[in-house]
Length: 166
Image 1 (cartoon, rainbow, N blue to C red):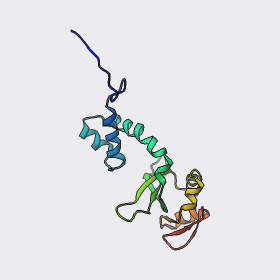
Image 2: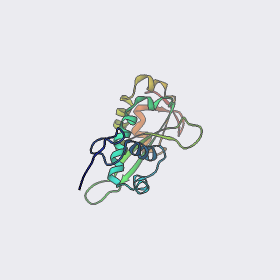
Image 3: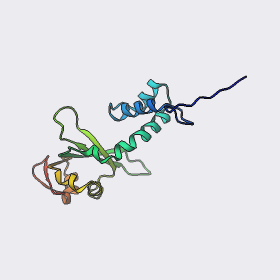
Image 4: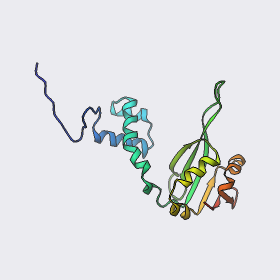
């Protein structure tokens, strides 16, 4: 029996999927909104392989500050993603979305753990001062609890939109 090997720039050493397939999986999950499971099934790959590809190719895209360019209206919404059990309380996340778009759904900018004003303020402080200054409107989740938690970060203009004071 004879064996052979071949190298290619498209397939890094010890990779289980080509760079092109990994990029496509990341695009489908990140931009097209498909589930990791659906993409894995379609590509004939395991869930973990696709999730690693999404993390590897998506992290530089998420970390790029240019992805926030053009955002003038920020939506803030809390979501319970893990229900309470006898061993832990309900866990929440805060979703931050670009409401500037005039067509199509809002663009998800980030999801941060918890739902406190501290978490929101920290996320905003991590953004460039110029970006914060360009924010014209912030639209919080309309619940009274969210508005109260975020009150130090903005002043209310109406029930669903606010003038930025970040």
